[in-house]
Amino acid sequence: MSEFFLHSFNVLSHGLLGYIVPFLFVLTIVVFFHELGHFLVARWAGVRVLTFSLGFGPELAGFNDRHGTRWKISAIPLGGYVKFFGDDSEASTPATGKLAAMTAEERDGSFHHKAVGKRAAIVAAGPFANFILSVLIFAGMALYYGKPSTIARVDGIVADSAAASAGFNVGDVVVEIDGSPINSFGDMQRIVASNAGSTLAFQVKRDGGTVALKATPALKEIKDAFGNIHRGGVLGIEHKAQVGEAASVPVGFVEALKVGVEQVWYIISSTFSFLGSLFVGTGNPGEVSGVLGIAKLSGQAASAGFHFVVSLCAILSVSIGLLNLFPIPLLDGGHLLFYGAEVALGRPLSERTQEVGFRIGLGLVLMLMMFATYNDIVRIAGS
Image 1 (spheres, rainbow, N blue to C red):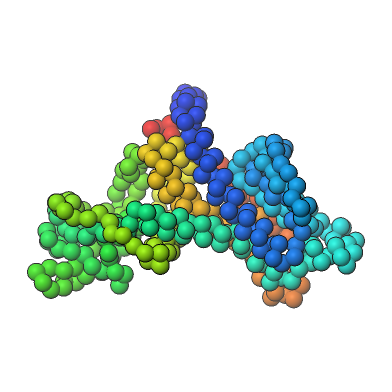
Image 2: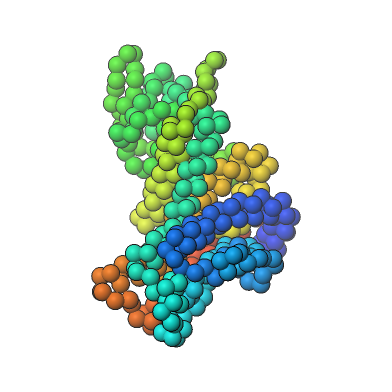
């Protein structure tokens, strides 16, 4: 066991040096937009913002704006926070004693004295800023590179595969899966990969007509472009690009935005599918990644080109936005849960209840981080 961790340390110490800069670049952009969402809506709601920090811990550099907000970069670059007037901590827990002693003017700028609707809007603005960022990134990439248009054509079928059992023929073109239109081979791959073990209804064009087929993607290990291994659904359909076949088509601004929204929705739905598979026991908990895994992927993306770094930024932004909406105290979703209870009860939850909730939330977040970090170490050491 000690040799395993020694080997892991050696791999990490050498490999992560090439991952740090791209990782910090990606994470800083995602965190900045998340906190900017909180900041802008708070300003709109009339809340005084004391601090806008990228990172935690001691301040490395900063300045004060004309509204009195301290903008700073802190020593631990693994997140960030916006601290409002009336907050007791970076997690926006209320400073109860100070709140009670505030003057009418001070209450007007206090986060915790705002109506529950405004507080909820401020909290929700962070995750939704992440979603907006991702939509814009994906839309920008569609404008620049075009929309994928490779036809979902069956050019080969692997023997004894799900596709062979379902009755697919070479030359078939998949046009619909479970009622969703398929515009490219990539569309089909994404749906199949996230539905291992689930029976899917296919509509395929064959000999001038349409044929209905049903197939159940098999759960198999898939190697991505960087050599990382994931588990996902596989049909056993092969595709070969034809001479003169366009890989993408130009799109306008509106269509590009549609592509962006579709990409974000796919990531969200795939995340819930994965969580559902974990819940029923068919998913692989080892695929949960943490900071080290993201750092490694950032380095791999940087080595492949700026296009991959930007794509990773969009994917990570959706993931962080969605994670923050989970109803876990300490996260944005936990605050929204408390506000929902406040609306239902007609009063805020007691200070004691909120304190216990934040402690439970902290424990859950720490356990998740430890579990994800262990997975990352095992994967990196084994690579």
